[in-house]
Length: 530
Image 1 (cartoon, rainbow, N blue to C red):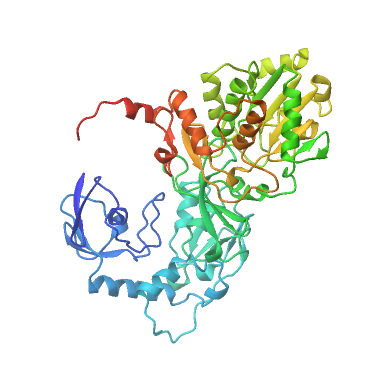
Image 2: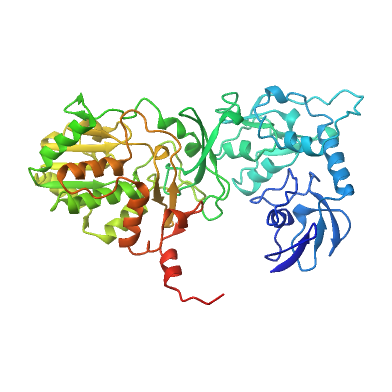
């Protein structure tokens, strides 16, 4: 550990810690454009210049300064103030005055830092240098080179993260601009991140461009449900409508990135395939009527339930508990498989081959109790030993390669609890709509065993409710409610009973999540008294 001093305040940080990050520990923000915590250091914007009091040379860039014992810097001197003003003046010399129509307005660092460090009287007498505008450089990205401040973040992203290297800085001096090689276009599946990391309005996302001013948006932390990686995201919404997903930093999962398919998956939350009303034998009914129809079928016996890797831990636990308390003797199954999504191309970076967000959660529950596998379910269906099958979330008709009209021949009653129309919903006798992942509290377990929280951003659409609440209502009607009406209480039940989750709660999960076994190990380790 290194003891450094920032504006006279001592702080201990790991050796080599970037001084921009070290300053955050004492509540000091050092302005910067080119620095990014998940890219290499460029040191070319010069906005982070600070005075070095001890342990180095005079003014220096904080981004390229590692913490070491005895280092002392100041960010509040008159010299630092003037250096920042001068840097801002250079950056703005040829910048277009189009803030009112720029899509980055409201989250632009050039605007923010100008208000804090700008020279408000222009000394420019020559015409501004004009550069290319509105260039279509990829499926998701538009480039406006006039707005570029040459921070090179996008260049380094292509070189270091996607290893595709399409973008470069061309020309020199005040003619320097970002561009793409002639005849080339961005072709990787992480293009949206370029708009995220651009500190100004040079690179913008086509999908969000001119859709909504950012100061109207509300934000909520959540998890992408596009695959088993479980990228941390921010849901940006207003008046019940989602306008975008943004990646949220988690160094243990996705750093600061997400794939384009996951980014665009927000559109599916409210698309035309959503299930909005309970259905019994093809007719829309009230939720109570649908539950009573399930009760009538369940009382005939020979019931099976299928856990769902598309649904939350809380929903799966609720269904598992229902099989123990409300439907004694029910057989519990889970269907293996990766639920392939044709819009996603698995890679060795973030996109998992498994397009289910909670396969690990189902597997953990399967290891905990008597849960049968895919072969057992196929055999039970083929032998006709089940009268009722309750399916949670997964499209088992498609996953088991059953002909869409065949389920009616395999068992009398098929019940589906899900968010979207699919082959299983179409083949079901009873359909119950459940809330999308952004419309409920809950949790997923990603492919690395990390338990991560979902937080409700929107109200559920139509008659949909969180699956764990629907299952609790069904259990109450059967005389054995599993006590899963609320997400936090349901998670507490799981954590108390399932090995590896001991000591976990929504509070301990926090914003970054916890790995299965870590909480239990921490709870069992002896106190050191430190």
